[in-house]
Length: 141
Image (cartoon, rainbow, N blue to C red; front, side, top):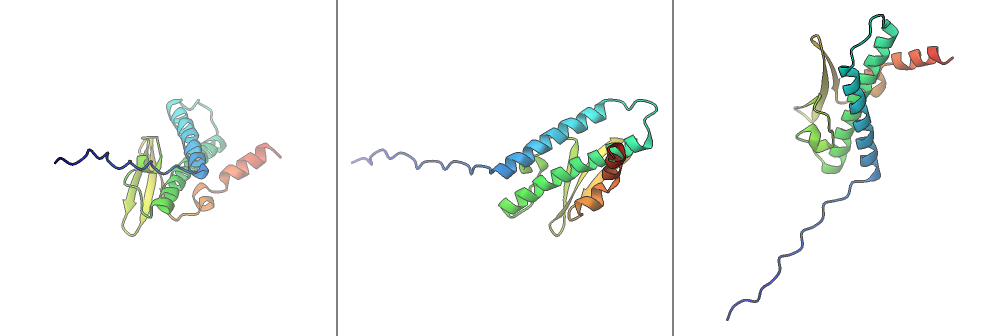
Protein backbone atom coordinates (compact mmCIF):
# COMPACT_ATOMS: atom_id res chain seq x y z
CA UNK A 1 0.00 0.00 0.00
CA UNK A 2 1.39 3.40 -0.92
CA UNK A 3 1.04 6.57 1.13
CA UNK A 4 -1.45 9.06 -0.26
CA UNK A 5 -0.01 12.21 -1.80
CA UNK A 6 -0.07 14.86 0.86
CA UNK A 7 0.47 18.44 -0.25
CA UNK A 8 3.25 20.33 1.51
CA UNK A 9 2.22 22.77 4.22
CA UNK A 10 1.57 26.31 3.00
CA UNK A 11 4.49 28.72 3.06
CA UNK A 12 3.78 31.60 5.43
CA UNK A 13 3.63 35.01 3.84
CA UNK A 14 6.31 37.47 4.89
CA UNK A 15 5.26 39.96 7.53
CA UNK A 16 3.88 43.14 6.04
CA UNK A 17 5.79 46.27 6.75
CA UNK A 18 3.95 48.94 8.64
CA UNK A 19 3.20 52.45 7.53
CA UNK A 20 6.13 53.82 9.51
CA UNK A 21 8.57 51.59 7.68
CA UNK A 22 7.21 52.73 4.32
CA UNK A 23 7.44 56.38 5.36
CA UNK A 24 11.06 56.03 6.50
CA UNK A 25 11.90 54.08 3.34
CA UNK A 26 10.27 56.79 1.21
CA UNK A 27 12.17 59.54 3.00
CA UNK A 28 15.40 57.58 2.66
CA UNK A 29 14.81 57.16 -1.09
CA UNK A 30 14.17 60.90 -1.50
CA UNK A 31 17.21 61.81 0.59
CA UNK A 32 19.29 59.36 -1.44
CA UNK A 33 18.14 60.89 -4.71
CA UNK A 34 18.95 64.34 -3.41
CA UNK A 35 22.41 63.27 -2.17
CA UNK A 36 23.31 61.64 -5.48
CA UNK A 37 22.09 64.68 -7.38
CA UNK A 38 24.08 66.98 -5.13
CA UNK A 39 27.22 64.86 -5.40
CA UNK A 40 27.03 64.57 -9.17
CA UNK A 41 26.32 68.24 -9.88
CA UNK A 42 29.48 70.33 -9.52
CA UNK A 43 29.30 73.20 -7.07
CA UNK A 44 29.31 76.48 -9.00
CA UNK A 45 32.07 78.98 -8.30
CA UNK A 46 31.10 81.71 -5.93
CA UNK A 47 28.98 79.53 -3.66
CA UNK A 48 29.23 81.04 -0.21
CA UNK A 49 30.06 79.41 3.09
CA UNK A 50 26.40 79.62 4.12
CA UNK A 51 25.40 77.49 1.11
CA UNK A 52 28.11 74.93 1.92
CA UNK A 53 26.91 74.80 5.53
CA UNK A 54 23.35 74.13 4.40
CA UNK A 55 24.57 71.49 1.93
CA UNK A 56 26.54 69.72 4.65
CA UNK A 57 23.60 69.88 7.06
CA UNK A 58 21.36 68.30 4.41
CA UNK A 59 23.90 65.52 3.82
CA UNK A 60 24.00 64.90 7.57
CA UNK A 61 20.21 64.71 7.57
CA UNK A 62 20.48 61.95 4.92
CA UNK A 63 22.89 60.02 7.17
CA UNK A 64 20.57 60.45 10.12
CA UNK A 65 17.63 59.11 8.08
CA UNK A 66 19.67 56.02 7.21
CA UNK A 67 20.32 55.56 10.93
CA UNK A 68 16.59 55.78 11.61
CA UNK A 69 15.99 52.94 9.12
CA UNK A 70 18.56 50.88 11.06
CA UNK A 71 16.83 51.69 14.35
CA UNK A 72 13.43 50.67 12.99
CA UNK A 73 14.94 47.39 11.81
CA UNK A 74 16.51 46.83 15.25
CA UNK A 75 13.17 47.52 16.96
CA UNK A 76 11.41 44.90 14.82
CA UNK A 77 14.12 42.26 14.48
CA UNK A 78 15.81 42.65 17.85
CA UNK A 79 19.23 42.93 16.23
CA UNK A 80 21.23 45.17 13.94
CA UNK A 81 20.95 44.48 10.22
CA UNK A 82 23.89 42.81 8.52
CA UNK A 83 23.78 45.42 5.74
CA UNK A 84 22.03 48.71 5.04
CA UNK A 85 20.05 46.93 2.33
CA UNK A 86 18.60 44.61 4.97
CA UNK A 87 17.40 47.71 6.84
CA UNK A 88 15.71 49.00 3.68
CA UNK A 89 18.34 51.45 2.46
CA UNK A 90 18.77 51.57 -1.29
CA UNK A 91 21.76 53.86 -1.81
CA UNK A 92 25.20 52.27 -2.12
CA UNK A 93 26.86 55.64 -1.36
CA UNK A 94 26.20 55.15 2.35
CA UNK A 95 28.55 52.86 4.25
CA UNK A 96 27.38 51.00 7.34
CA UNK A 97 29.62 49.44 9.96
CA UNK A 98 28.27 47.66 13.05
CA UNK A 99 30.60 48.00 16.02
CA UNK A 100 30.88 45.91 19.20
CA UNK A 101 28.20 46.34 21.82
CA UNK A 102 25.30 47.01 19.47
CA UNK A 103 26.55 50.34 18.16
CA UNK A 104 27.16 51.28 14.51
CA UNK A 105 28.30 54.04 12.20
CA UNK A 106 26.87 55.25 8.90
CA UNK A 107 29.17 57.28 6.68
CA UNK A 108 29.25 59.05 3.34
CA UNK A 109 32.42 59.83 1.39
CA UNK A 110 32.34 63.31 -0.07
CA UNK A 111 35.51 63.28 -2.12
CA UNK A 112 38.69 65.17 -1.50
CA UNK A 113 39.36 62.87 1.44
CA UNK A 114 36.31 64.13 3.37
CA UNK A 115 33.86 61.76 5.02
CA UNK A 116 30.76 62.52 7.04
CA UNK A 117 30.03 59.93 9.72
CA UNK A 118 27.10 59.39 12.06
CA UNK A 119 27.70 57.30 15.20
CA UNK A 120 24.66 55.58 16.69
CA UNK A 121 23.29 57.22 19.79
CA UNK A 122 24.17 60.74 18.68
CA UNK A 123 21.13 63.03 19.02
CA UNK A 124 19.96 64.52 15.72
CA UNK A 125 20.46 68.09 16.92
CA UNK A 126 24.04 67.39 17.95
CA UNK A 127 24.83 65.68 14.65
CA UNK A 128 23.03 67.90 12.15
CA UNK A 129 23.57 71.02 14.22
CA UNK A 130 21.63 74.20 14.35
CA UNK A 131 23.36 75.69 11.30
CA UNK A 132 20.62 74.63 8.88
CA UNK A 133 17.94 76.14 11.12
CA UNK A 134 19.95 79.37 11.53
CA UNK A 135 20.48 79.75 7.79
CA UNK A 136 16.85 79.07 6.98
CA UNK A 137 15.74 81.54 9.65
CA UNK A 138 18.05 84.23 8.20
CA UNK A 139 16.66 83.66 4.71
CA UNK A 140 13.02 83.71 5.86
CA UNK A 141 12.78 86.29 8.66
